[in-house]
Length: 294
Image (cartoon, rainbow, N blue to C red; front, side):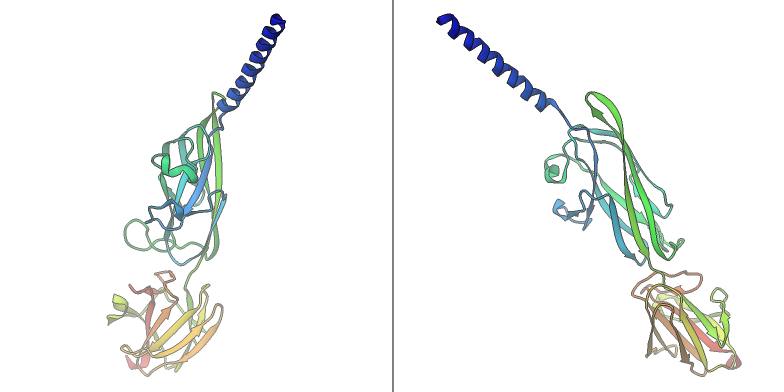
């Protein structure tokens, strides 16, 4: 009887150890590292509660009036570290910084990120009309929908082996542009070739481009951009006449006898500086002078 009892105890011990080994095997099983991109709502916020779109593979930033930077957290959702990380885009107007990261530690999902050490903040810059780094104007994005793919590559560990990983994230913006065509009768005036300039403090410009017309009392302006333009016009000191020009619409306005100052306001939307002169208030300025009064 004692022998049977002893044998039963041994069988129970073997079964228990076997179960423990299985549990240990489950514990040792680790998930390879993988990328998670999270947009920061407010780059100045120190709280990670400002993140959104944690598991998204696409980001639509909506209307873009001018060059702008967006901010992301790049985190590691797995149990193994990610290393040799490279970041790139397929559109020259879209830039990511930094372009390389040495390593992302394991277990840095947003829910645990505050206890996971340093997490890199990515700066995603979209150039549309103004330089993001420095001063001056740059090339406009094509008007309307623009896309770019942010590609992130790296290496991680899977069952003791080094493997390559790759994730792509789609970025979309709607590039807005303020632009017009100016007509004297049926003749289009070339906005890139003004006749000269006139002194003015409007928009902090100092001098505003002048276009001359012949003895015509009215001109027409067509909105060829993709934003509504509020047109204000009058003499060089007071522009108290107002009319809204909606997309693809044209308006005709009556001119004063000599110098006419026109102001284009589309709430800070960028324009082609070779065609429309932008003031430091984000408004476009130009003047028209009747040729027979010069």
